Amino acid sequence: LDSESGPSQGVTITGGWTAETSGSGFLGSSYFSDNDQNKGALSIAFNVSLSQPGVYRVLFKYVASDSNSIKTPVTVTCRSGQTFRTLVNQQLALPASGFVDLGSFIFDSHAVVVVENRDTDVDSPNDLGNVVTVDAVQLEAVDLETVCQSCRGPCAGLGVEYEASACNATTDRQCVAVRSCAAGLEYETAAPT
Image (cartoon, rainbow, N blue to C red):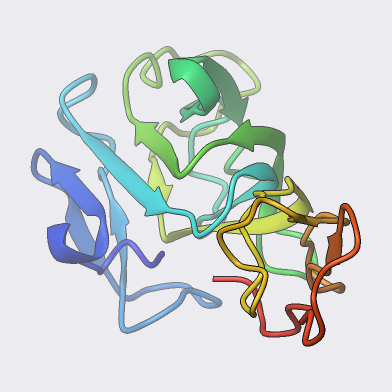
């Protein structure tokens, strides 16, 4: 999700962030910056609906600068409301992928990633700045869980079918019969939804 997306796309912006166009490598026409102001009052929440539960890698995109915070708080909320907080050094250049990897987490049908500007205003000899920038969040499927659903076909509703393998980024689910069935048993080959 790009930070320029609005609430209808799952992005909630709290406080007076500034849309910036300086720098390079950002998605869309701009990214957001706190301009080292209103510390503790600004946040951007990315609310992501997932088509399938499982393990997802959470990636974060910002515009790096020597004036950025070295400890930008990012909180990931995953399965059962568990939260994990990490601090991102936004002075570091992003890897070739354009996103920093925050780790892999287990999600049900929904993920929330919140970037804040709280606790980013303490100067230290090695901290050249405190600006927080936010551009985008991306989730990549790592290991999706099997969601058992009946196969389509003449045996549907008889409780004799189940999914034999988990869906993931490279394989489709495949249904097999638990016991023999009347002629016309079908295997589900359509992409998971």
